[in-house]
Length: 255
Picture 1 (cartoon, rainbow, N blue to C red):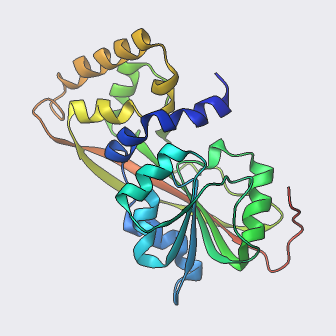
Picture 2 (cartoon, helix red, strand yellow; picture 1 turned 45 degrees about the vertical axis):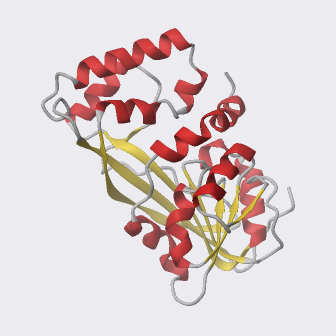
Picture 3 (cartoon, rainbow, N blue to C red; picture 1 turned 90 degrees about the horizontal axis):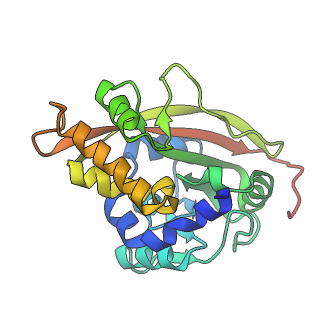
């Protein structure tokens, strides 16, 4: 299964994605936007999906949501009617040059053709504008969280130890501007966690029998952990944010 095929797998689960995927902490979004804070912001949610990040951006400025998948865009508009949601991709952004103050990417930068995406983001950002990528991941410092990944034995992203730095946004058009991590506690249940995992790309492209075997192992593990056996519990996520600032003059091209 290719990376592009996995990236295109989410549309078939758009409604479940909208219902079960977590959002982003306000503190993480505020940190991402700190270099351009103040005044009326023009914001681009790139690869907006069903609007998980759009929701956090709407109170902070004028938002354009760009998403290539029609089913995901439909869910976004159902949740946030009137949003300026456009068909497009990171490699072909349907906006004019220098028109936004910040481009934010939730849970998607790793799916892009990075060179083409950097060039397009640099094109639509004003000088001094912000590019920020955010990811929610399970907190590997928590014993039972490590345990459920080991029990399920699926391919997944588990957050690194806090002392390890995430990959930065590095490109000649941008000045790398650091990273930060934020706690993101999500109330859920065993079946709620299974429903969330069903929206992950590994689950969407797995053989049905293999997927259900993994979820059976997960249920058996969680039913025997004191932290999760008695009903609702909090899933400890960590939101990673990496940030870069567009240079005043940049050597970009229309890739």
